Amino acid sequence: MNKIITAVLKIFFQLLYHQFAWLYDAVASLVSLGRWKDWILAALPFIRGPRILEIGHGPGHLQVALATRGWNPTGLDASPQMGRLAFHQMEMHGYDPGLVNGYAKIIPFANQVFDTVLATFPTEYIFEPAALSEVIRILKPDGILLVLPAAVINPIRPLDRFFAWLFRITRQAPGRLDSAYIDSVSQPFKHAGFEIETRTIATHNSQVLLLIGRTFSDNSAC
Image (cartoon, rainbow, N blue to C red):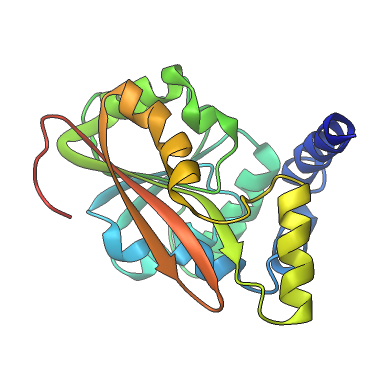
């Protein structure tokens, strides 16, 4: 049964990110009880600038937030549909979109050009050695990788409990952000050559996990 649910969800999210991208914001807001944008913005205090690459920029909300704060964001996404949505978001807010259609495994930028590489709620690609090798290649020697892999809703109200349960059974979020889960998602980054610091950030009756990755040559604090 779990395999069937996983297969159906994989198809659903593929469609949601491509053919039905126009529904993405509505679905994300619904399943997170309106917390989605707050979750992705939780990474902002940890960013180093000015050159920032967001992998998997989606509909472009974080690109707008970065530009609003005076950073120089670039977005990379494999979905042309998301690229169009993000382009419109940036133009609507008066910013020049710096968006590229492409894949994390073959990032089309020169070596050591970004201060921060950022990915919020990425799919499995972010754990793959080829993608992480590319991230290391394009980061400056003192640059950082920020990955926000998961959020959990604190089951306080009945509706919170329902969506927390739904996230668990659909495997869109762990039951809790315990040490076992944090260690499991950190391992691929450690194996790729990152030193990993983890932060659990509380926001609106929920918790967001943030992984902060530095290469071994970077011993500075965030």
